[in-house]
Length: 77
Picture 1 (tube, rainbow, N blue to C red):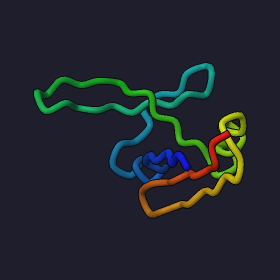
Picture 2 (picture 1 turned 90 degrees about the horizontal axis):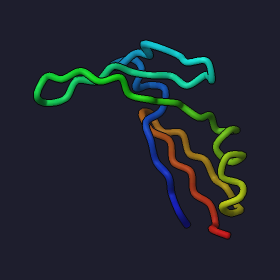
Picture 3 (picture 1 turned 90 degrees about the vertical axis):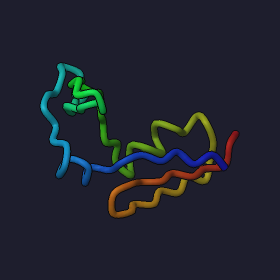
């Protein structure tokens, strides 16, 4: 089963959302090791959005919310 993993919204405690575009995409400001600053696209899909977004990829979706991350497993089609 494929298992996508990413940060959840708890990441915003350390890296707040600095902008939202007209499509609802959210952005964080990040700094690289060399001190450069970048605006990074960072959306936080919910437990109901993820199975819907990946429905065409498989079945038996299982979402697990951890303290700082989420995991989604499913049986590939």
